[in-house]
Length: 264
Image (cartoon, rainbow, N blue to C red; front, side, top):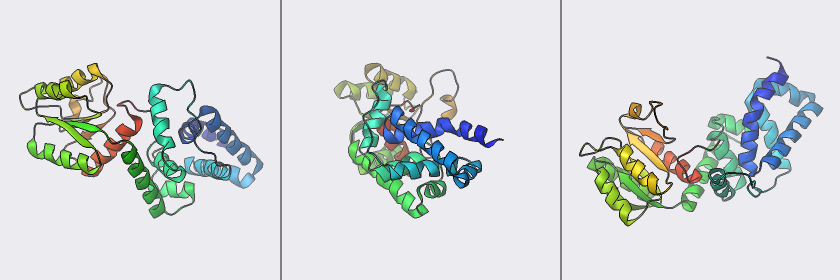
């Protein structure tokens, strides 16, 4: 594939990253243009771009780091979902923000992110964890757990409180979930699908979302019931038996974007 075509294929992803990093499409695009101009002026840099996304992002990182500016105000045309993400990004220190975005939004491995940032892998791993910790501190909320297995419900309660959140209620049925929400709207819902009395966690969540927009994480042994294509599918889906680290990550990301919809 010609170099120009290869770079063009990667540009939408680099623009996405630049916008998330800077909080502004115009500012992000300006850094992308500077990166391409630098590549045109440096034959070695230009040749390195044939190796794929890592050297392209590495070149961008050098430009952004050398002309560093703090996250700009969110674009006026940005939707509420993206504005919420911007608000949370702006609360994270720059290097931590970079490491988080590279390994989540852009799906680079820790080793690849280390190459891009000119750091060792352990340092990048530490930066990512610091970013997650910063998000957790900024995003403390009340959590409703909809789960009919007592041991799993207790495990989730311990996990949630260890992250600094509070439990506004637990429910083993749709009716119990309705009773909890009647008293207080949660800031986050962790929900199983199949509940104790044969009622549906999906219906319980629909009841809540009819009242307010709340991030939801489904934790279920039956993911195929959600991934049918017949209805909007959840962004955050954890399969049982789950690893606590997976649930922690899902909680951080759901609260980071303050929505159950992915940023686009």
